[in-house]
Image (cartoon, rainbow, N blue to C red):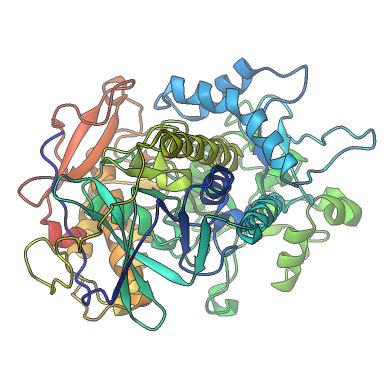
Length: 580
């Protein structure tokens, strides 16, 4: 990779500076798992979350946790299913590490108090989901698995924080703005913004990004309001390599509501893969099955296959949605297995017991992110990334259902153990005499700073992404999207709406840049003008800030560290200001 550079958002001069051992940004499964490990090891740690602890994607997750439990199942089978779903871009070593580590990570979660559904005989009630060839999915409360993970980890961390001499501090409603780096390029903390607008610096020996995904880039998403790509944008500005951003998974079955009946700010309602695992099927308005004859697994095909088929069907007919038919379940099955989905649908005027559910694909999960290994190590020393914010090679070009919560737990455990070991060995220590990092209080337009974007254009940005960077893409549409994104105007000030828009603009541009570069269809990246998968594209695409201030796109062969040679398929090159 070429020499790295960094930029930072313009902020007021920091009003305060504090120091700790490890700074964690994000409070989902990955961040909490990391924090629980560090608390047990006595590592001074601060966990920052921009909203409440439970306001991220983990708490919303309906699907479960994939791991091998049944004697009839095997690690090799789980690996095979993950690699097939990943469409040739998984890192086999990382997949093996995930699958081998999954049962132990979940058992540890159970020891911390998590309760998963069991059958009448007391064994785990294992579910089947899309892309899996065995029942290996643990659920809690039917469709409230993420909530149980969040509850158990939050409770474990509260116990640690409440213990005498606890070394962990949890700070809610504190927004991370940028990763701070020293002159050698090592991460040394984060700049933060308080609700009252005050800016401060949390310094530390290591920074762990666990801030989730980017779903709010699109108008229809299963992600919460906080999924604005903060961690990826921060890491990118800090000089980290970002990888596989073109692979954004669209979940096939997101509840569609007539725009005339939508409530502003209403969350997108995911209708879990597990509903199809229990026998629900996707049909058109005439009652014809959409997936019949298109894939051996039919409605349980990998998500990219189902989403692409649905998009094609809607394009042919002009329909703005399709239907998920689960009427055969009956009231009892809905109440026992999917009570949360049933309640949310009924709250929005849809009764799945008696009527098919209107659905269409919606932005769900980013398979790419900050290039990292399963221990969280990125290309920036001292900066770690775990969970959805990270691209570890586990997900490849398309995530296998229910591997994400599992990855968050495994990666959180691993980076927590790694940093705890370093702390005990004396190799991880906060700066003895903290000094103000370079660039403090820089004004917009000064060297080394990136521009802020006007939040008035947020709906415009989402519309651009919905039209040009959706399930099915073309060079013409992607080029138009990049042009439109580059024309959005600058904003002033530094509040949540400005930060949201700025980070959304950064990740939107990175997604579109990677998507226009990859001239093939693979996994959840579909190019209508390049419908075939091409073997010469079987490599990762890495994006980073180059020394001249423009993004570079490089190819990373499987099994190698991020970097490689400059791609012979150049993307549009935009000035760094356009990626701020």
